[in-house]
Image 1 (cartoon, rainbow, N blue to C red):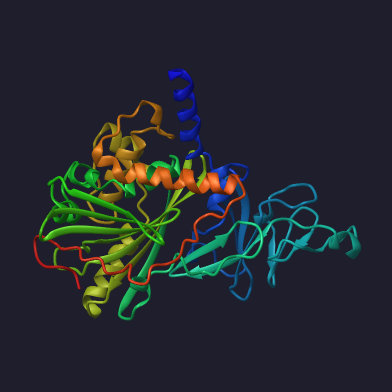
Image 2: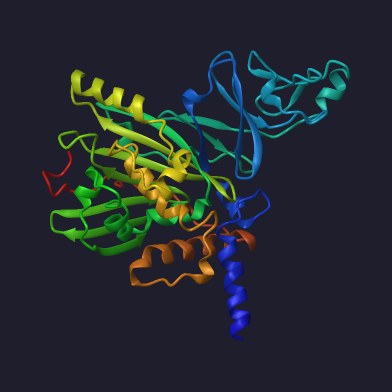
Length: 392
């Protein structure tokens, strides 16, 4: 009986990490808008390859600047489409000139004729641009309203909104689980050296509260009366947090972080930074700082971090993700959860798993999943900086 129970649990744990199109998790994630690229990564009239949720795709911008997402290969002889030409709002294959609209419909097959082209279609997915990111809906049927990913904190006036994306060589689920693990902050972000984030949160062990909401999970980590950290985690893979700015005197920043599977062993860590304007001089310094450090990806410095413990100098855009990277990559490409020993401080992680198992089971059995919706007041996140004052 013990062996059977262990085997059953092992299979349940695997469900959390399998993200291909024919898996329960893959089908579930495809029901939601997912950020697949930074807007500036593809210019008008150009195309690039993209792999998301185990599927190879082509992201291109028409000559108008409108983004389109279609299958990765031409239906004819299966060469990659991104090497072809963007013409108007369509893309033409380099091999034999077959041309496709953003819907995936073939509009021209020069050597075959119009009737043949009309019968050919590849994948084509709706896209939506928001706060410097390109989102795609990879599910079947009509796309849902683009509402759940939105945050009022990203849309208010007086903000500079920036976006970036990194690819990490590990499974997405250990990355979203990290968002629901408030205790790690007291250790991971003190590693090597302490940046503004580690200083603000401190090494105190928090009292934890987790509540399922209409949008996801609300996490409250209380370290002291003036040190309460709240995060608004939105199903299925986004975390909204507030973090210290570039320097001690900088404004605090609202951040949205999505962890989107490339496949089972790679993940896009996609982020929005909503930074309050502090005047021309400070804004210029902040933009220069982002330009210099925003492309940092700890995966490019794996050996330096793991074997030399050579932590990056920049305390915000580089140090914080480097610390998280070492902790998460230390679990391996896919964490072996059959060997872990969870405790009471892992309540958020256990709640996260229960929610995903519940939603996948409902979907598998043909029952409705939860109607997740954006919270009306999710941005009221009274996070205080114990060094100074609460952010505005």
